[in-house]
Length: 309
Image (cartoon, rainbow, N blue to C red; front, side, top):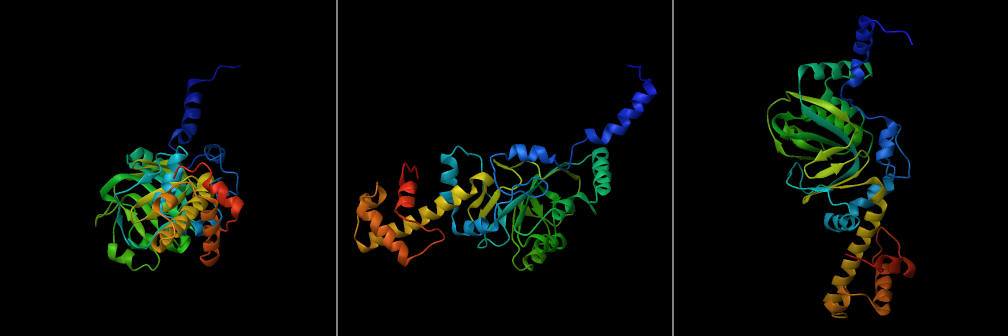
């Protein structure tokens, strides 16, 4: 092998410099590896695509039931609370598009901006995640909790987000233009606070990468369940099990309350292993109160077997 002239080596290193900088995205193969437990459909970039029908069913479940199921399965870092909510009575449910922001420095910010523009991204980096949104997505951003000058969106970007996703945002950061955002029908936001300042000294370092939201880890494609109590990030491969089990728990609790009010059964009977007679009464009750999932005796026994909730 011939020796490389030092000047030639320097030129080669300079040419490779952009590849050594933090990437806005991870390779498709890496995203598929990190979410390899998901066996369903994916977006073109590798992000898991939970079916719309399953996302819609998730609107029928509560955080407590879903959290318990995940916790029992070993997923202990999926919930984060303490939010300022644009519309507290309007849940956000959808698939996560993730973004990671860091404190800015001029050299990194310029390199990322130039590379992003060369790849077809428009405008400043805080608008790039919006260009990735599809219908039903939730824009989830780690803005390292920055409030003043950490306002990731105002009402202009809020309108753009809702137009593309029909959904809202979750920001470990702040937002501005509170009144303008309130005027977007159907849009909701979970943020750390509101602030009138403009976004400054912040750079996008990750797009559709794993991120941290407070105590929780979020991967692209996770199911976001945001309610008054807080936000639960459900791994895509766990979504169907969590949703169906949580719906069952909800129906079971409704039946139990009805039986206790009627005096037919005691709390000790409802809260312990069900007898065959209670199971039959439950199936009959379901015929009169149909829910989002259908049950027969075999399916009921599978839900009840070895339960820990």
